[in-house]
View (cartoon, rainbow over the protein chains, first blue to last red):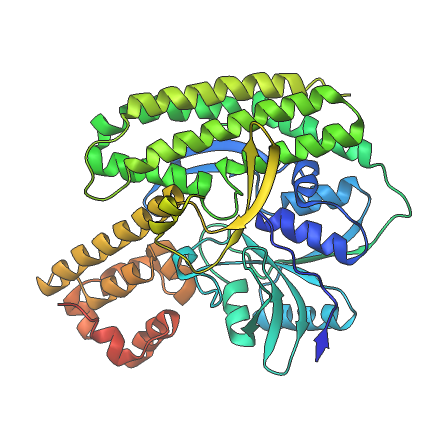
Length: 333
Length: 130
């Protein structure tokens, strides 16, 4: 029986929360928004050729695993990241690392996650949680979605670690093990902001960043005519689910990113960043407004709600606002 | 969240951390249920899944699909995912979706499907439709 003295803290997004909590265990205090911003977690991409749950994929975040690896790398923290093809080997390794006294981050699928609220149990393979101990019959889990610490059996843990489908975790486990005596948080923040700004306005590809938001808006205008009302509203719902569901901390990570900018401005003593943070806050509220009005179109057996044209106009407005914000942020030194 | 909005909540299983921005107070974080707009879109996802399940049930009763189709839909799985879980090739699973071929399947193969769906062979053959 092992039980590490791990502090469970809820978070808006699983991966930045896990990163922040793992570092916190090793006495390195970094807030969740900081971990998210330094790890350059914010993103936008619209991938109409890729279908998930019968609708095109819209993503408001970077590839799974990036936040943890970028944040630790830029701070000079050494980490181990493993993937496995053999479930037994993955569980043995987990036991070994726990016995050495390290809490471990795991990528898991949520469909078979027994402690998860039933309404979230979809085939979503990019969830992250921490194992911080083990008893005779179960593993001790800190999951940033949940209000309290939870437990999971050996069999269930194998099942979620080897969930199949898009972004299959393949037993992925990770943990930091060695920390530098000092690190340059200032540079880490600046690098993180530049990376995100570059992703949002500097990629010459129409489906990525602010261009991607505009592309989605254009497509959205055509949905009712091309797909019919019912399918159009389902496609819209999919966009909103990716934007607002658990794990985004609201408005497609825009609230958490704004919180990061606010903290960054304070830390760097650069007031203009705090002003940009306020703009980001208004922008996030506007995204929230978009999802709120959009969700009325997704209610079963309700009359016609907001027209798709009006919603697309709102998206265009979001793109304009973010273009301005990130063109500004790209200049950070 | 106002009391009026709270009344409409569909899901009250777990509170999460939400970040927000108040034009007066700046950035705020609070722990609460998802607000009702979000709950609506989560429900839409499940309603759509339920509708698909009903459609499949009708096709099974009409003899157009095998019971396997029902369990796939129930578990929100499409061909590539079921193939990855069972290790059975996609074209074989497609054949097993035909009622006539499904009826003749050997217990070994049925067991492989059953273990992925976490049900017995008996349950696999008799999904609770009607």
